[in-house]
Amino acid sequence: MDQEIAANHAILLPLLFDLMNDPNTEIPKQACNALDAILEGLDDDILHYLPTLMERLLLLLDNGPNEVKATVTAAIGSAAHAAGNVSLFFLSNT
Image 1 (cartoon, helix red, strand yellow):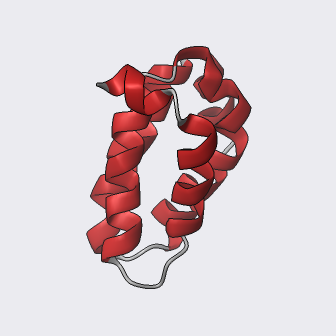
Image 2: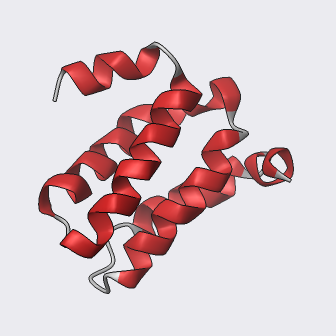
Image 3: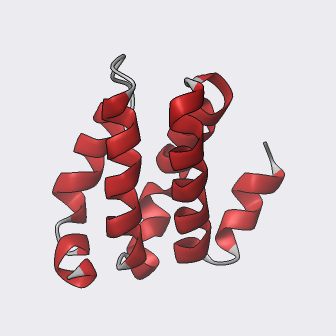
């Protein structure tokens, strides 16, 4: 199922990036949950999205409401796992 979802990454990820900015706390939280499902099957396609993804996630982690931070942390972990060693660059420069 993850591969089927990830196959639509070009449509889904930009929508999720927009939802991460929603002022309703539940919306960014659910967007991060959806990211987990997509990122698991994304493989190398994540590299195209990684700069924007990490920027949005780290912004939420720094400035988002506490109710969202655990979900954001999980999404960062999924992104790091999917990106492999490339994620070390983003995490070490923050």
